[in-house]
Amino acid sequence: MNRFDGLVAIVTGSGAGIGRAAALRLAAEGGTVAVFDISPDGAAETVELIAAAGGRAVAHPVDVSDAASVQSAVDAVVAELGLPFSLVNCAGILRIAPALEMSVEDFDTVIGVNLRSVFLTSTAVARHLVAAGAPGRIVNTSSIHAVISLRDAAGYAASKGGIEALTFTLAADWAEYGITVNAVRPGATWSALTTPMYTPEVLASLSRRIPLGVVAQAEQVASAIAYLASPEASYSTGATLSVDGGYIVNGDMPGTEYAPR
Image 1 (spheres, rainbow, N blue to C red):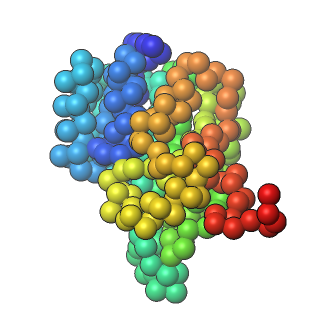
Image 2: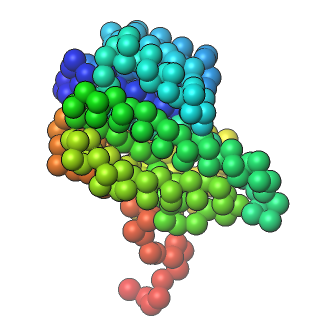
């Protein structure tokens, strides 16, 4: 497929993980990708991977929680590459601590990177699109922990719930401009963020909890992102697509049952 031929895409947090997988997928389908990441090395590596596969990408080291940094980077993309058709928000961090022990600084940092960034990048891109009278696609990366608890991660869960609320609010606000805003809701997924957490015990528990029985690869989430970021998704807006192997719909109690079968 070449759904992104002639189109420009911005992918935040694309120096690793789901963001990198999304950037690679959009570039593989013909898109020119602006790689936004706070890590210059991570961004450069993603650009190198895209180039090695025959695609086109440019790196922009960006602090997505900082308004000036975001605006400057988006303006640079418009000047260098043209209007972005797609914006994919994947930047995210996690801080683990009981709520009673979590510092205000850590909470604010998580909200800034995970949620504030979505507002900053989305509005920065939308201003350009509205001014040009051009349509666009915005895809935000939520998490199953927007709707089910994650112990000792109050900031992370709050940020992901906020992303989903922001998604459907912006979708309603910007529909008249032809800008769609959707979200993906990944479950357990292999990434640089999660790999240290996936001990053998955790993986065994997840395999029992997830109906499809395995932790997702980042490329599987990127497939869903690519659809929502593409021209094909012209009549989807304000939606959240779960990519979780059935995690949140599983009400089973692994290892037990109500009555013998």
